[in-house]
Length: 410
Image 1 (spheres, rainbow, N blue to C red):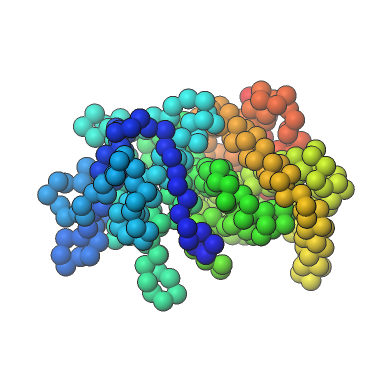
Image 2: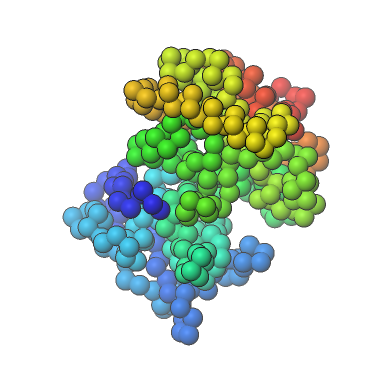
């Protein structure tokens, strides 16, 4: 992606000599599989239409594959950018990095949810003949999208996408993985939204991302930006956006409910959670004296702006005024904005981890208000972690979306 052409070196928490060719370690390994002629790419494990596995790992030893990427003096930073070996290392490092970030947030190891004694490690396939990326029992697999010139844009090269798919593994490990017959729409949709949030938090652990985000937005995060545009492939292309105005009564969400569309149905929850994160960030800005409280009160989410019923021109004028106001305070205070953003990231990640620790498949019964159990658990997690510091903005962020906590006190 433009602006991130130079790779960021990632160090993972492993003893020397424990990551071998592939890359591979004791918990995961990469197989750079290729197609069986005349097919150029590997046939995907998952069916594109249903998402159900058509066949399963491990990838047969006799099937075609590229030579594994090999370390030099224990590291992989010698590989040329853009080569197959480089991207094999990229996807391995991303999965390891995201998992380690979230193990820190949870304060414990996060084992894989699958329990196959014959295949206990996660298999990662960087390239397959699929228009999607897949996370399932025992494997992650990445296909491609076609760009405007009909060239493949490989999803294994996109940090957000790899982090999102890793998020699915983490959530199944923490919340549980019921049989498909018991996976309600709100269970599936919550997992999609939550996997997006896993990616958002992981991105913010890279200082270059934090600095570029703040410089591009002048510190105003209620906007379409590199953080809210999930799976971004270019200035005008992304897979989903967390900065959205979706509510439970939005026509698109109602249609998603009727069509059992987990991605469309996930938007109110992911949008509400993103609003919550930005509200926490702006509270830290006020606490540090970076912006006045009055400016934070005027700063509104996409859904709050939509609910205000303003005309399009009025919305654009308001957006420009707020951006100018944030820009005035950002000048000379970039380090304070960076500190506030990192503090908000850590608060938000801890809140999510404690929320998901309290959440089980029973919180998605498939009847009653969607996501009610998760928001109830989030309020309880906030009381346990902060003494209820964010309770008001949790309720506000989700109430605007039509998501309310259940009557029980978690």
